[in-house]
Image 1 (cartoon, helix red, strand yellow):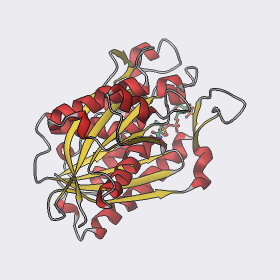
Image 2 (tube, rainbow, N blue to C red):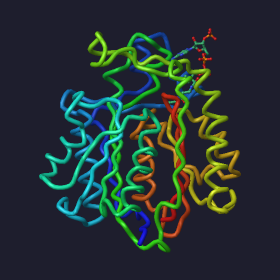
Image 3 (cartoon, helix red, strand yellow):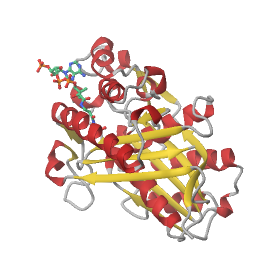
Image 4 (cartoon, helix red, strand yellow):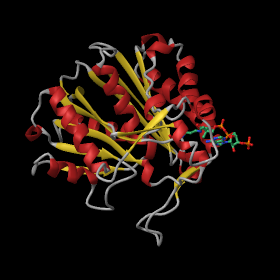
Length: 320
Ligand code: UT7
């Protein structure tokens, strides 16, 4: 019998160090005013040396397990969405598995840049629906501070570090849970947002490069059609949505999506002001915050959407 994936816990980790816009203005030619007006960002958390993707993912995973009241021993699979793994291999996810004291089940990473969490959620949902796993940790963990060109004001002010996790468990098909996920990619846009080096090339490390204006244009158009697709697939309308939990890249993109859905601003979960863009971690960070503070409640309909390097984009519709 097919199962539905129910979200039973959420957890987060943010690096201790908080860096405001004014501090960045001492490094590159920028200003707090420019960053706030163009992006909505006021500050970001930046990782210290010990705060790696695996370290932060493990902390977020523990938070999700505690939140659900589930022991690590019950986890069948761990999926980590990251573009900034600790090592080329083994996967960050198996480092998390070991840190949780698990020697059963399976763990792997998934790279889809800022859409990584939606991709990982979709794969985890498929594992649960097919009966291959019953309890799955889905984690987004990123340390973009290590791949930023700190002399490029066009990108270094936009990103932050952090991790978010959710715990999924197989539940009855008619119950709450993941109603649908939709994934898309178009590799012809690969040069609009990329890292110019990796272990598979001669350069051992690289820096993030972005054509911000073009990515912005794609984000507004592609996310608009992604949310229409999610609603149509479920026979739902805009008025049915209780919460939009978007990828947190730019406040202007988020506001455009809220307006398109006819949602009042207080129904859109925003963390970009405090976290900046944490790539694959941004959606679970925002989701966990809104669950923890009591905004998102049982029975609510939650729409998640993201677009990132690839290009990759997609959506998830969840009944809490
Ligand atoms: O998560 C993955 C997806 N990523 C995104 O969704 C990011 C999408 N793009 C964006 O969010 C925006 O395009 C940015 C925030 C990156 C840039 O905002 P924009 O309004 O598109 O600015 P722009 O790139 O058109 O640049 C406007 C001006 C330029 O100066 P000129 O050419 O008009 O003289 C830039 O050089 O702003 C300048 N500029 C800056 N000025 C001060 C660029 N970065 C900065 C900066 N401080 N940090």
